[in-house]
Image (tube, rainbow, N blue to C red; front, top):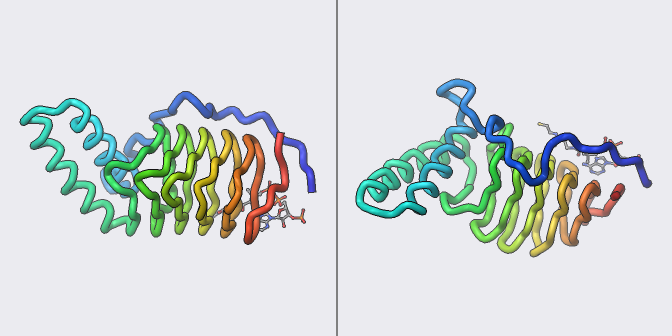
Length: 167
Ligand SMILES: CC(C)(COP(=O)(O)OP(=O)(O)OC[C@H]1O[C@@H](n2cnc3c(N)ncnc32)[C@H](O)[C@@H]1OP(=O)(O)O)[C@@H](O)C(=O)NCCC(=O)NCCS
């Protein structure tokens, strides 16, 4: 079925960091991302103080990983503005890359080598199991098993996933 595509108003290139700002202290998914962001910032700087701060970030990351039950390594390649509304069971390989302003729901798996563009929404339980590319503004349906590239603006659903819309 081919559907009309609405013009997205969330950027696929400019991270909206407000999406990651803590709403309160007990905000596990944003705390998890905060520990990853801080670790990567200090890792880029180097030096003794940065090394100490990185160790604190590693402890924070371990704590929030246990709380969220997510497996998102501290060296993951995550674009800014990532939303993990329900982070439970999210697994992302460190050699996958995620563009800015994506939304990843619970129980999503992303394997090594996957390239996800900007403003991609990935529904609950979706699995991206091959080294595919997901274009900007694409949507992946709940429980989809993605084995092929998904063009920009397209929606992929089902097992194996099929494209139902694209620009
Ligand atoms: C994929 C998705 C974004 C499509 O939304 P949409 O553009 O509004 O599409 P529609 O609901 O009109 O569905 C279009 C077609 O795809 C099918 N479809 C939609 N979602 C599907 C899914 N996850 N798996 C299989 N088929 C799906 C519909 O049955 C419909 O098929 P038809 O045209 O033969 O009747 C949405 O259905 C989805 O899965 N979102 C994820 C939401 C989620 O994970 N929520 C958890 C909140 S905690």
